[in-house]
Image (spheres, rainbow, N blue to C red):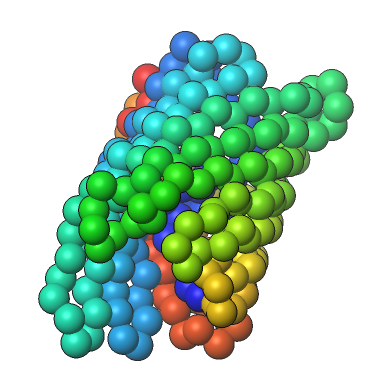
Length: 229
């Protein structure tokens, strides 16, 4: 079993944060992500679209084009699992001390014969977090209903700590764990580091790299340009 690349997560990390997109504003990520093992490379490029529908509700849609290249096989590419989600903040840091949100995500069946899952799945997580001066910490977890073929239900959990090191740059570290998502697979744990850099008030660069520490020898990465308006 291998960790997924952080496409369906809280960019640039696997874990998400509980804060929704600002009300009546957009966050649009032009992204690329991938993972490398000793015998294969895989990943995706696409658009991650987010809209603040209310002060506490974010609507999300992700449209990925995936690729996979085994050491002894041809390159395969195609449309992956389109994602639809809604992040709802149920508690606010100003009143409760922490932000708390639920963020169910539905993954539609892939149209590709070789890439993505040919069945629908549903991730149901809860995320918490708070800001403390220049520091920010967030994380949580949940489980995904993922029945189809050799796939099986699985759970995930992660935690992130970030710090603003300048007016434009924020860096962070993450620990993330996921149980096996295939029958006969194995759980995986990774350590990662990421950052965001503000080019302008409406354009931002994001990057992340992680390494599996549970024996899979997998390296994952994520890069994106974020447009906010």
